[in-house]
Length: 284
Image (cartoon, rainbow, N blue to C red; front, side, top):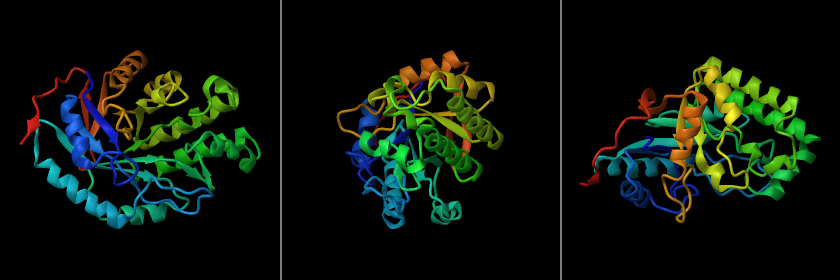
């Protein structure tokens, strides 16, 4: 049974709960471990206002709060994480990450050439015009994901196919189209060569897509390519559970042929099987 969540946000970026409130929620729900992965750094030059990421200075203060919490809870392991933003200059991203004492870094592509991929359906639809068609927009997205993996800056790729968020029943583009499958396949092959993990993210179950990120067929292909996985719920909102969808993620992983997932301590991967039991946990 999966009792780890490696993707959760606090009020440091765009979450509803403070770090302490988030940890208490994780304790109450019986989790064994959690990575607090607020958005960092603040991306620049988007066409639309962006309020989900934070500055380096604020993020450093946040890490000190998380460090204090690590000594306050028995039975729940708390990891210092970050969900870093793809930016056009990955050298700039490397500079912003330098010197941060993190356990786990996941990378996500949220903004591409001013196009905010997953902010709202209205803004998402602007991608078609900006790139001259959905095919070019989506291919550029998956190319950026591959580039981020190849940078060596991240441990896992967040919500790999988040471009389907507003595309239920393929309303804007056909997820079964050969060009789409080729774009995903090429991206997965690039990731496989790096050793970087991909995330099984349960937030899509709570979004218009009503599906895990990534889709089952992508997860099966990732298993064939021996790409490791992390698991996260992408927790943001008070009305959600920190552990939302973990059982669904485990079922999908088992169906794809996975028997384990990764956690990271001090940027070093450790493998956990699905059968690792939970521990007793309480506030110290």
